[in-house]
Image 1 (spheres, rainbow, N blue to C red):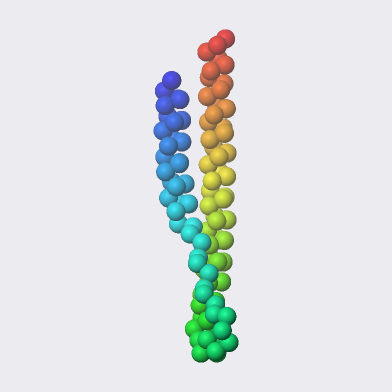
Image 2 (tube, helix red, strand yellow):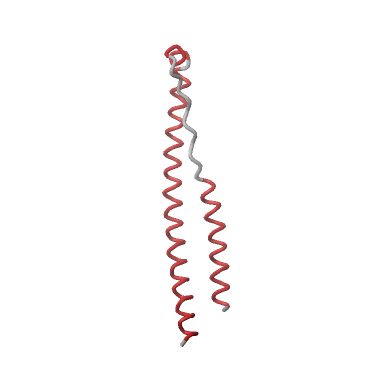
Length: 95
């Protein structure tokens, strides 16, 4: 029973940390691009900077998601091993 409580405690802590990680990977908002040719010419440099900033942020977002995926995959592997041990303990109790 103590092992089960420890496993649940570990899973709760891991879920808190994964929630914190997930909150940091926020997708960037796409830049507004005008359709009027006069506006495009008037704001060309600003539009260029906004687009470059957006694509930089998109790359950062994808890197963050890749890191998050690896971390969550590892957490799921550990949780799976822990759950297998719980199932073994339950089988031992039934015998």
